[in-house]
Length: 227
Image (cartoon, rainbow, N blue to C red; front, top):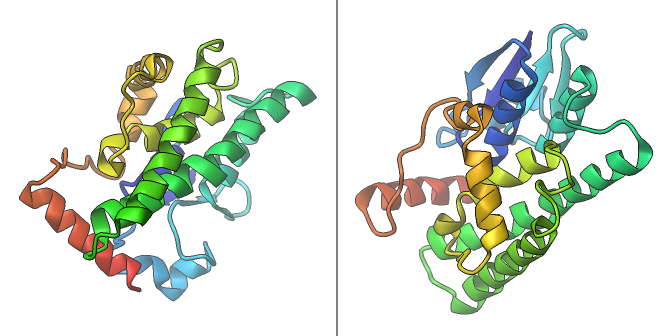
């Protein structure tokens, strides 16, 4: 049994999609980010960085794993799924996993901060992170022009990347003209495990560009950023 500590964010969805894909039994403990629950002492024992997601593997001496990429690798190795065992195949997948961890996630995250969450709009910062996110999307599009999935076969590289790219509108980043990326987004969205995974721990509402729900969500995110 796995306990998943999570919230409805792209990083959280990586772990829940992976758990759905590999078919391990798991239970969910939702973390209240707006209430700063992730900074409480009991959770810091699981993840010293005070972020979600994290897992505890009760079948392996209550072994705790934090950092979403590390969780994907751990679960892939535990189950023998979605990560090749040959040296070259494994390296290809991990290269693209690191591309997401070091590039797509941080750049889109910063685009969200400056485009959505900061009360003061800084055009240079917004443009910087939106442009870099778009550049990374173009890298993915070129890769997907010759590969069905990011690293060839469906893998943890796709599971890591899709929850972020699917939120491109919230980051203010266009995918116009990126036909291979669009094809892959649709292919991923059709997967039952992806559909179930983004419902964990609960389904986020579709936030419009200017509606009250979007502003309420943004205000809550500002409070987290100030902690």
